[in-house]
Length: 261
Image (tube, rainbow, N blue to C red):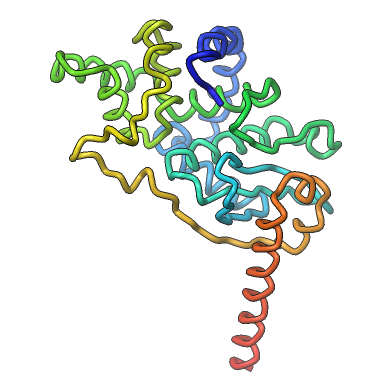
């Protein structure tokens, strides 16, 4: 988990990777205009066409999702019990793994299991890619400048909270992006990174974006449940919940088909 003890190191290492990540972002934005202006929707549509999606709420709140490959198909699981802000970030994170690391995933040379408890070196590129794709630097600079003008005596933490509503992304993601773009200092980032913003939200804040979507979608989940990567990383209770719900779903579907016949 990113905190005041390691955020300085995170920002420093991110800066080393930025040239490479900017090339990745440009490549994705060239896929279509939607990836520039509505990247989250573009990512969801792209993955829906090219992978089997499993959207299921997991009780393991530090778990974001994973990408795996089995029997000629890619499978992506997104934990929909996370706040929508974090879920949005995970969509872009997993998209990076699928698009840029497909061959490594096929050969099982990398594990794309996203666990937010510990900063993972192998996940750093995916995290940075998600941030750079989802937060336009020009827009961020303009919005932040306006906030400083309109709320010049307000706390920095409240400026970040206002930006959460705009970008619909996690608090810490925005803090780090502000520092990377030179809009705040690294010392500022260290000072506010652990701020308990959920306990200090203004009355006007749209708290629905901090709620989970709890969406459920099954695409060939029966195959995914047999995957070794899934069995190794997913919680036993989540595995059983998905298996049970999927069985119920298929049973109900068969009953509906039988009635139609």
